[in-house]
Length: 320
Image (cartoon, rainbow, N blue to C red):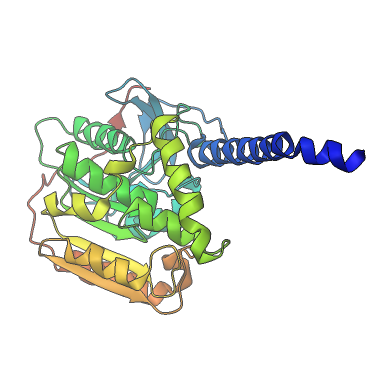
C-alpha cells in the first residue's frame, strides 16, 4: 500500500523536489549577486576646511549624481608646481591601502588625493558597479583638484588598483576626464572573464557557465549592474594619455592573455611591466618595491614635459 502511494504520487514528489532545488538555486543566485554589489563596510571620518603641507587630512565633495564622497589629501612640500596624483583603491578596499603609494608620490613632489569610492568607507552607500558608476567619483575628484587652482594649469595623474583602475579608464573614456597620465594596476579586461576566472578558483570548469550566466542576469536586471559596459579593454581605445600597465604574471583573476589583450587596446605611448609570481591579491609596491619604483619612475621621467604654474601653494582653503 505504501509503495502504491509513493508510485502514485511520484510526479508530485518530483515536482516538489525540483521546485525546491530551483527555489534554492534562484535564492542562492540572487544572494550571491547581492553580495557582489553590496556596499562595503561603513567608516566615519571628520571633514575639515583647510589643508596644510605635510599633513594627511580629510575632505568631502559631491558627485554629479548627488552622492557625497570622502577623501584624504596631502600636499607635498617638494612640489614646486601644481602636480597632483589621484589614488584609487580596489573592490571592497579603501583609501587606507593607498598609504604606501601616497608616501611614494608625495616624496617625489606630487600632492596626493586618496579617494573613497561610493559604497566604500565613509562615502555615500551605493551598489558597487566595478568601476562603471564609480567613474563619476573619479570625475568629481578631478574637478575638485582643478577647482583648487582656478585659472592655473594643473598636472594630474591617476594611479588605480583593480576596480580603481577600471574606474579611471571609464572616467577618461566616458566622462571627458583628461589626466596627464594613468597607471593601471591589476585592471580586469572584461567582467565576463573576470567573473569566470574568480569562479574557476572554486568551481569545476564545466559548471562555471551554470553559475556565471545567472549571476550576470540577476546583477543586470535586479541590481542594475551595467554588465554590457564593464569592458575596460574596449574603453581603453578612447584613452590617449600615456598609460603604464602593471600586473602580476601569476594573477588568476587577470590572466596573461587578458593582460596582453588589455595592453594591445591602449594607444601609444604605453608601457607594460609584469611582476613575476605576483597575484591579484598582492600590492605590487609592497610585493616588489624595486621593480615598482623603477617602473613608475621610468614612466614618469618619460612623460612629455609639462609647464604648470611655478607658484608653490602655501595652503588651500576648501569647503567641506
